[in-house]
Amino acid sequence: MKTDIQIAQEAKLLKISEIAKKLNLTEDEYEVYGKYKAKLELSLLKKLENKKNGKLVLVTAITPTPAGEGKSTVTVGLTQALNKIGKNSMAALREPSLGPVFGMKGGATGGGYSQVVPMEDINLHFTGDFHAIGVAHNLISAAIDNHLTQGNTLGIDITKISWKRVVDMNDRALRNIVIGLGGKVNGIPRESSFQITVASEIMATLCLSNSLMELKEKIGNITFGYNYKNEPLYVKDLKITGAVTALLKDAIKPNLVQTLENTPVLIHGGPFANIAHGCNSLIATKLALKLSDYTITEAGFAADLGAEKFLDIKCPQGGLNPNGIIVVATIRALKHHGGAKELTTENLEALNKGFANLDKHVENMKKYNVPVLVAINKFTSDTEAEIKLVETHCKEIDAPVALCDVWAKGGEGGIDLANLLLNTLDQNTDNFTPLYSFDLPLKEKIEKIAKEIYGAKGVEFTLKAKKSIEQFENLGYKNYPICMSKTQKSISDKANLLGRPTDFIVNIDEVKLASGAGFIIAMAGGIIDMPGLPKIPAAENIDIDENGIISGLF
Ligand code: ADP
Image (cartoon, rainbow, N blue to C red; front, side):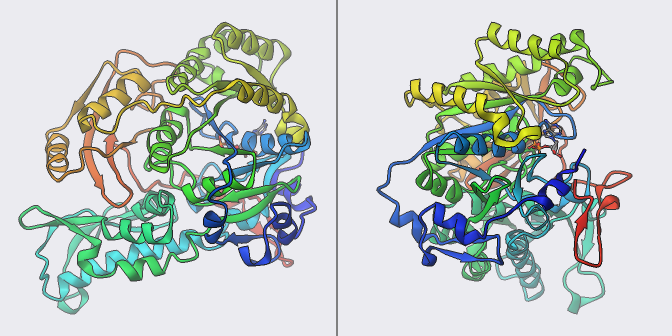
């Protein structure tokens, strides 16, 4: 069997100008980055302002195994399928982070015959957006430490600096560090920390901004720490808002690439869904809605994380109206939730037990008043009997279902799903309603997510978390939405609880203010924002030969 990278390297790519032509773009409306990548000009948003939006469809998933259950693969495959049956569809995806590329999961450009290409470029550096975001973030860090050294006129309390440094790498040794050692000229010694770039507030802010000027305003409003009176200090206090934004002048523009079947895709921004809000940029989604009739987008991890944040943060903040939700399920993950250890042999009993996980996610998604479909992402190890059982079960829970074989067959394997979706969208009226109203108190919003989405019986807040909530509400941030930071391995905040956990309490250790991105982060279950590498990292399989051909990138 060919690997993802072998399939991608055999693909016949069109020049990116040909892809831009399919979208009716003029040469002034995009800037090419080599032969197969381009950045779209933001002026397009203005030009297309009065054009009717296409339909917006979110692809999410059941609680995944560590390998991922194929949201990107299904997103790409479905957009290929829609184009195959004559519909004008684009995918809007996130950019991969180098953390998973070299860590455990590998790249994030889909798989098999449903990939975005050039996959090596997209997975490694791409158009430099993450670099720019990292440097913009670290400029703020450098300015904070310089301010301390230069006399600290703002009265920054060094025990209350919340702004860290970032690098796009899984590097556990950077979780807790001491900086400023070596005497007076080398800075003020203090404890600090690194986050992975995808957890940076600059990443979230860029992804939730509608324009360069809005990004600038939001960057100025980022809280980096507190003064001795415990009052918040903002990036604008450091007088570097313009410089930070200048570093992002190209990163804010969406990247245009193509699928293996030469259909257009926008890939832009990439916050993780367990430690950030998990969706591609608002600008890319909005452009895709103008440039195509059907935008297929994904949000990270399972529906309790990425989808909840897509529906409760991104859509309300961006005025987006989702028209359909597809929950991707795999038979291997369902069996995993049903307690099976061996996932590639038939096990109807475990599969039956595992349905509880799918049921909870489908119920959750139905709360948003958007039609919900299930896509079974077919693996070669799935048996006829297993597939039949999932189909029957979906009928019982009133969830339209389609078998999706886009990994093995590309767009052709997604035609059933595409037709099912079109059928559903035809009957849909715009009824989308977020889970909570922004004007609820912060604590109630957190409780609503924990109880209604995770199924918790209650929430316990540490004293520190309670104090922060009180402080943020007093500062005027009561109306912010909540970005939960929690494990992706369970619907609950306890990684080992599989299936559909019940009778558990969600523990909120810490609550943080993201006054640039515009949300409150609730940290559940001791989640960390700098992952580590596994014992045998994916990096050990990656290689390059004398012709510059890369292998091992999945
Ligand atoms: P997610 O977006 O949910 O994290 P991906 O689409 O990135 O998942 O897929 C994760 C990995 O699983 C990729 O390496 C992909 O090639 C592989 N994969 C996805 N679907 C299938 C399938 N149906 N059969 C075999 N491998 C698959």
